[in-house]
Amino acid sequence: MSALEDLRRKIVLCKKCDLGSIGSRVVPGEGSVYPQIMIVGEAPGVNEEKVGRPFVGRGGKLLRNSLEKFGIRNVYITNVVKHRPPKNRKPKKEEISACSAFLEFEINAIKPRVILALGRTASEYFGVKSRLSEANGKVFIVNGIKVIACYHPAAVLRNVNLRDEFNRAIKQAKSFI
Ligand code: URA
Image (cartoon, rainbow, N blue to C red; front, side, top):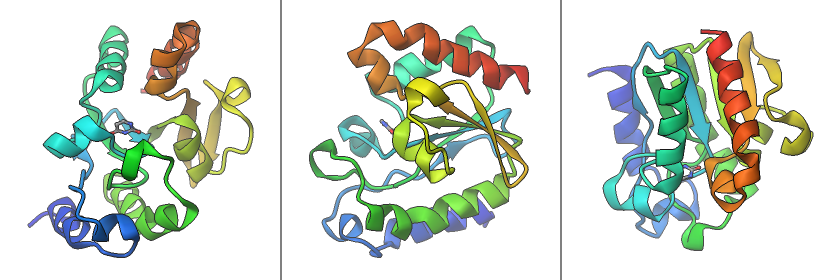
C-alpha cells in the first residue's frame, strides 16, 4: 500500500476532533503524486462531502477552469481540514491542529515545489499574516516550498471583481512550474 493510501485509511478512521465523531464523510486529498502544484483549500463543503472528493462544487469548477486556462493539469488537491464543519462554518483552531498532521504528511510525501493556498484558513496555515487583499499572488517561502496565497474560489463566486486577482495568483503559480 502506498503511503498516501495508508494516510487515506488513517483519515477515515480519525476521531481526533469532534468533526470526526459526528459521522460526516471524510474528504481526503487526491490527484497526482508528482503534481506541478499542490492546492490546499480550507475544508470540504456539502458537495464534497456527498461524493468524498475535494473541490467538486461551483467553487471547484471555477478553480478547475482557471487551472485549465493557464495549462495547469497535473495537480494534487487537498484541504487543511478533511471533514466538513457543520453548516460550512470555518474550522476551529483545535480542528485545524487535530488535522494538521495529515496535511504535513501529504506535503512530506509529495514534496511539492509550489503550493497554492486558497483562502484565509489555508494561507494562515502556512504562516501568512496579512489579509488576502494584500497577500493574494504573493510568494512565501515555507520550508523551501513556494507558497502562493490566493483568494478562495468561494470568495470569487461571491464577488466577481476578485476574479482577475484570483487568476493573477494562479498565473504566478504557473510561472514557477
Ligand atoms: N472549499 C474548500 O475549501 N475545499 C473544498 O474541497 C471545497 C470547498
